[in-house]
Image (cartoon, rainbow, N blue to C red; front, side):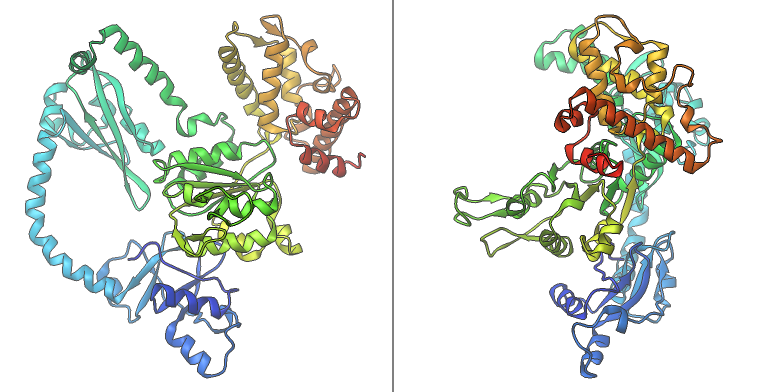
Length: 579
C-alpha cells in the first residue's frame, strides 16, 4: 500500500479536491473525520459527473462523496485485497483509522515482485545464517515475550550453552545482567552499553525490532569480546590510560537513563498514561497536539517525542506563536527573500519550517496564533511546501509537527477564533497533560529530584525537606505546575543556610493550611468532585492574594514568584474576580 496517502475532510470544498488531485496526479481520495476514520470516498469520475450536472466547485465534499466505502485491514493478505472489485481501496489499522491506500497498480506490482522473492528466499536464508554467525561477536534475537528465537554459535560458546539449549528459553535465564527484554517495553535502542557477562565487561547494542510501528522483539549484539579489546583500540589511537577510559564509560552509563521518557519524573497513573500515549505517538509521523495548563511540561514532552521518533536525528525547532509580533510571525515561520521588506537581511533568511526540515517543528502556544496566519499554516500542512515572504519559489519541507496550547481550542473553534480545518489537522494525536494538583503523588518525587539537581548545579551540599515542609509543599495547589515547583526549589536552595529546609523557610503562600489540617486533605478520594474543585480554586485564590500582598500588588513580580506567565496570572485574576 501507499502509507502516506493524501486525504480530505467532509467540510472541505470540491475546489480544493480538484487542486489536490491535479497536483499529485491521483484519481481518488479517502474522506476522513477528525479521528482519521474513513467516512467516504471521492473519485475523479464522481467529480466530473457532478460538475456536468451543475454542482458548484464551492460545494462541500460531504454533499457528493460516496459514503458506502469498502476498506481493508492492513494485516490482510494481497490475495484477499485483489478479490475486492474496486480501483482504490482505503487501508485501515486495528483501530479503524486510515493507514494508507491500495490501488490495482500496487497489487500488480506486488505480484510481479513476489515471483523474484520466491527465487531469492533460499539464497537469502543462507546469507542471513552467514551474517548471524560472522557479524559481531554474538547475536541474540528475542520475541515480544522475551523468549530467545535465534542465538548464534559465538554467543552460545561465550555463555557456555549449546545453541539448541538457549533457543526457546527466556533471555534472562541464558544471558546474565541482560536488559534486552526491557528494550521491548521501552521501544528505545540502547547502543554502546557496558554489560558484565561471564566475568567480563562487554560492549553491547540492544535494538528493538518493529513492524508497522509496533515493537515485536529485540536483537542483542556483542560488539567486542571484552572491554579490554576496546581499551587497546583506544590506547593505540589516543594513548589514554585504562582508568581514564573507565571513568568516561562510567559517566556515559550514568547519564544514559536521563534520556528519553525517563526525563519525565512521576509514577502517577495519569502521567504514565500520557507517557504510554506519547511513546506510541513517537513511532508515527502523525501531527501531535499537546494540551494542558501552563507549566505542565508541554515542551519537554515535545522534545522527548522528537528524540524517540524517526525524526530524532534531525533538528528540533521551537517557535512561540504568542511571543512573536503578528507582523513578524510570517517571516519567522516561512522565511523571507532579500529586499522583501525594509531591514530584510542580505541574501534572505530561511524560516522555521525550512530549518526544521527532516526534524520536528514545535508550535508552542498555537492557540494564540493570529487567524490570518492560521490559514497559511494550514496550507503548508496540506501541501508540505513553503513560500518565503517576497519570494515566488516554493521549498519542499519534510517536517514533523508538534503543537501545544493551554487554551481550549474546541471553544475557540465555536467562537470563530480558531479555524476548524486547522484544528482537525493538528488534533490527529492528542496528549492531555495533567496539572500537578491532579497527580499529588508525584510531588515528593519531583521535589527530591529537583532538590538534588539544584544542589549539584549550585555546588552546595545536599539538602532535604523537613516533614512539615514537605507536607506543606504537597498540600499546595501549584497553580504554576512543574515550572513553579522548579523555580520554588531553586529559590529555597539559594536562600536556605541549613541542610534541612523547614516549613518556616517556605514563602507564606505555602503555609495557608491550618496546623490541624492534614496534608492534601482537600483531595481526599471520598470528597465529591465538585467540592474538590471548589477547594482547589479557593487554595489558588488564597495563594494569589498572598503573593500580591507580598509584592505590593506588582503583578509582574507576583507572576514570577508563582512561576507562571503574566498573561496566565491575568486569566486567573479574572476567574476569581480579583482586580
